[in-house]
Length: 426
Ligand SMILES: Cc1cc2nc3c(=O)[nH]c(=O)nc-3n(C[C@H](O)[C@H](O)[C@H](O)COP(=O)(O)OP(=O)(O)OC[C@H]3O[C@@H](n4cnc5c(N)ncnc54)[C@H](O)[C@@H]3O)c2cc1C
Image 1 (cartoon, helix red, strand yellow):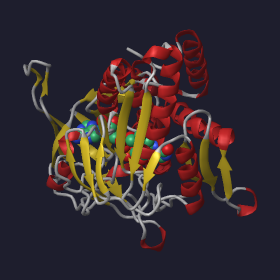
Image 2: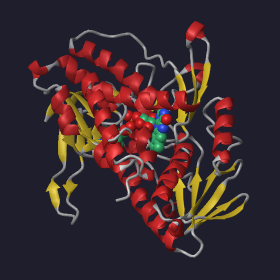
Image 3: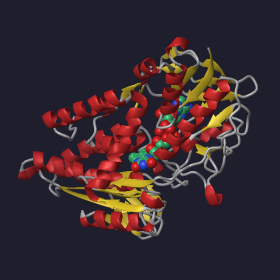
Image 4: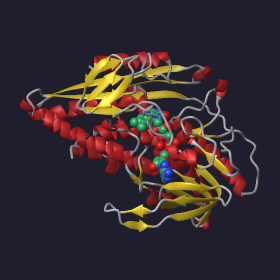
């Protein structure tokens, strides 16, 4: 199998790139120029995973099938997990596929490329903490659904227990930890409305952060407002608290032990360990080192999104955010289209920070918008911030579905929620 452009990873960045290239290269080429590969058959925008975990978003409704997206956007799709790279022969190897019983469905395959784009994302970083297996992760839709199932079981247990309480400890107060705390509270409130008074239970959430403030990568004012909002909702926010060990139902921290029915690890960021075995230069957290043209250390290979360490201003790196992946997708689409037309493009990638928005559950959000009117920065909060946050999700859908279908999908989901409720209980 040979394609001019092979993109590995159909997440926030890789899928938008495949859609843009496919649409530009058009129907005439029959989707034979661009191949997208992902280890899952469907796409869920990663910033919504905390909603899938809490049950306020249904993964089966939210998931968009790659094969359908490929047909509509005129690129090819292949399910598979990249496990090796031969940069000299310009081939990648996809792992064999097995069914649930371990029977081989598809043997190992090779795909050759002219240009390769790595967009495989990242996960959390356990920093070698012992007992990490006792925590839930939130790195993909499967993780989120796994947590959701166990969260519902724990809720049933709590509602029939004598204590009538359920405790959740979340390690790491970046966007994932903060948004999950707020979303679980919202899901709990919805659940309590559906239960009789004899079955209602208390939810105790502890958010444990090693740094001096939550949302450490964002401006101080956002951290302060988010901390205030979470504490008002009853979340116990522990700052400057390092987690030393995880045990079943318990966190051992620098400030003492914390008991929890469910523990979620949402701290740090690290790309796949296997990245270090591909023969490309990687940094200490296994991100591919790229230059300001997103070129990796070997010719004709690019990396983008969370899996790439891309230089930015003042010696910093482009942050691992959906807006960075989105901007890099637009940039690489221009570069690759030029290359396919045998034109060189000298334009470097320049990341523009438009600000950050964080969801705080029930129609609340907080964030800042950069470079608005007269180049000033704006602080936004409440319903406006939440709407802006939700519009980012719609913008991603628009990039892969077009405006009309995005509008229809949003309407269909609104109607579905009106009929069957927001919280997914099964
Ligand atoms: C709960 C949560 C909330 C977040 N909230 C925000 C937010 O509010 N704002 C924001 O800007 N960012 C947020 N983020 C971060 C944001 O989701 C990421 O920065 C963004 O998704 C990165 O895009 P990406 O394309 O690099 O990787 P991803 O979106 O992670 O996609 C990577 C893709 O690669 C595939 N893949 C991985 N390895 C392989 C392989 N070996 N072979 C084949 N396929 C592979 C995966 O299946 C996946 O589809 C949040 C993240 C989480 C988890």
